[in-house]
Image 1 (spheres, rainbow, N blue to C red):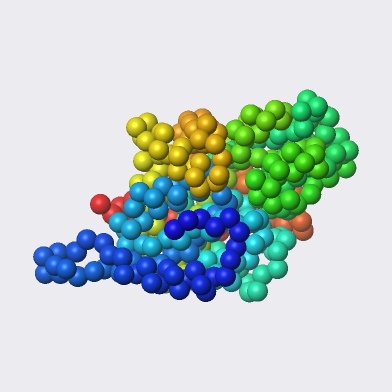
Image 2 (image 1 turned 30 degrees about the vertical axis):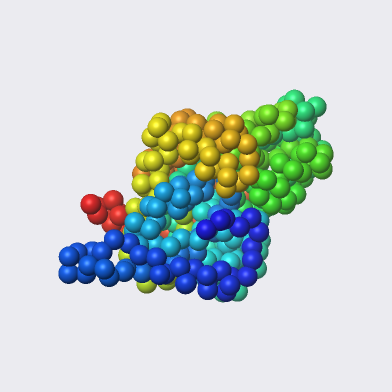
Amino acid sequence: MAERMQPTIYSARRTMLARALTLAVAPLGAGMAGAAVPLQPIEVIVFAGANAMPSYVAQDKGFFAREGLAVNITATPNSGFQISSLVAGKFHIASTAIDNLIAYQEGQGTAKLDREPDMVAFMGISSAELSLFALPEIRTIADLKGRDLALDSLSTGYAFVLRYMLEKGGLGPADFRFVAVGNSRARLQSLRDGKFAAALITEPFTGVARQEGFTLLGEGVSALGGYQANVRIVNRAWARDNPKAMVGYIRALRSAIDWIYDPANRDEAARILAGRVKVSEAAALGSVDAMTRGPSALQRSGEMDMQGLRNVIMLRERYGVPQKKMGPPSKYYDSTWYEQARARP
């Protein structure tokens, strides 16, 4: 199913997905010859881009179907919509920054929730792949003093990474202003329109920003030294009620990550990404290369970077409002389903 770039009516999509249950996987044994095994529908919401690539591949290459899942992928306009929709039960799984989960679990999120959140991360995907791009005439972080900077959200996601980068560059909190714009596509467009001096951009839009002549001022990974960025999260109640789906989903993404790392699939992977997020294949090819090498590459087998998670918690304790002591990593990450998926042959 094609990924939607804007949220639409959920009931209609779910009706279509339910009808797709006539699809079947191979019979389980000779005694079930001809019997169809229905696929379990799963609604997943992602930020369109490189971090969603394992989901795109798992869908296109049949890894989800092999695990008995019919996965529908929706692109979110921003983190507030994503988290509030997940908590409300409109989606089952989200691909997001783990800092978003921590923010809302600790009462520091910006979007209104219709109930008390009880979310948990269950799989790591990538470290911080965050590039600070500025207008061509801006050459250093010092040049951003007194300027407006574009973010997804003011208090979640990667806002704290950017604050840390700016502080290391000599700017204090009174020297700049953050403005919530939305996802990477929207932030890049805000640079094109000249509305903001700089913006955090993620793959594959970083390649586009380079091609269009914007100035790269720094990378989140090099500034921080390690940061668990993208993860998969879920409502705990749904995960407890659907252990088979959880394990199957993780297995499918692990297979997708292995497929992306295979050099023989490089060109096809670029075509998949380009088609999903509507960028050139040249830009997508650069993103695929970034996904398989360097400090911000996809984490092999989807393991969580525990030190990177501790850095996320450190930044939230430092910059979060209201300021408070956060919990240990185990408060936000449960490896139960991951370990089951890894142990299953």
